[in-house]
Length: 485
Image (cartoon, rainbow, N blue to C red):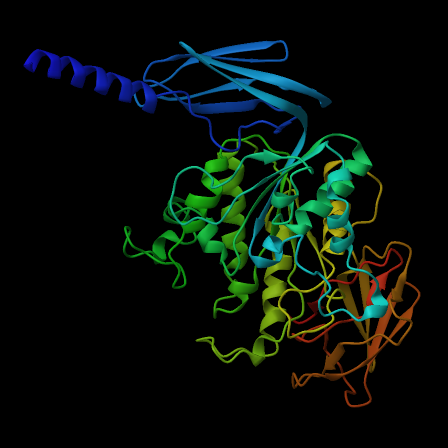
């Protein structure tokens, strides 16, 4: 009897071992996935300890061996773009997994807080006047199943625990239950890039409303940072500006690593704008980008982001910090500085895409996506398209007026509504800024006020409520600025 029990128990343990140690793949490697073209593609997973693993895809056959913990990974050689569905076979000992309907193209990560998370099935022009047209998201949802099968998506559900993504894996447009949850911005970006390039496009949607940038950056990055490490006193439970770093990185981003991607889109900042420290945001963003590029083995990965929209922060009463009407301007200035500190980056301005400054979720996500697509088409894909609005270059004082010069005027400066230019202020040596008259003269703007006889500085859109009308001939809005920083 004892012998039978021992044999049964041994077989039970053996069976349990094999069940637990079967080949496992992360959710980001599944049927319907898009593999990144023209780069080494990492395939990884778990198996029995020391199991021999073979991955066959197209004409490639790659082999490796799992380590003592059963972890394994290997790299496929760079692949050319292909919209012909292919199979991938993963073999390990007696087990084999076949992944179906795989395409090769470009993969973009979409991450950030609620404006990136904002789903396709939520009315995107809730605060829009009826005369401004039908909600583009509503039109898309009505015809999802007829959309291109060459655009694929993986949606990461929110989770606080570490481990694999909480996701069903890659889906096509036929899975409208997932697409309804998907980042609207990511959806419209993929649609436009695919239409322009005619290559398969994959979107990895991983966002979380109300999150700060510190949460998306691992603790180790801050501990090893020359900028932040000296201010960290408790190495095990430290905080950065009152926030424990790395929480969303561990649960929402790390499971993607090291999946090969083309680039990353980032729409975040509202929550960081609500804290006292604005000036370290460029260093925080640079740290995030450098960390992600290293982990994804993509040192020049394009990183394109959205400058946050007008919003009445000063009207918030529940925040611990009392906000001023200029706090948003200071934060947007910090976001603009990121362009010079982060290589291969791009920023879009959406100060004109707001109908209600009391709504932190502005409308027109399809237009936000379009502007990000313009940046990608220009900077990543080499297309000759205008992707930036006017950016302040220099100023000159001429008696009682200040003359401003700009880059990125794209054929000239104009008012987007045909009205006089607005949201310019001017000040003398006393630093008292007053509303100014601003006029376009050729490729420059002349700013003056009868109240300021000897001006020394100009500010543009330097207020949380500013919805300015200055743009270039391409219709892209000017970047907010001040001449006296």
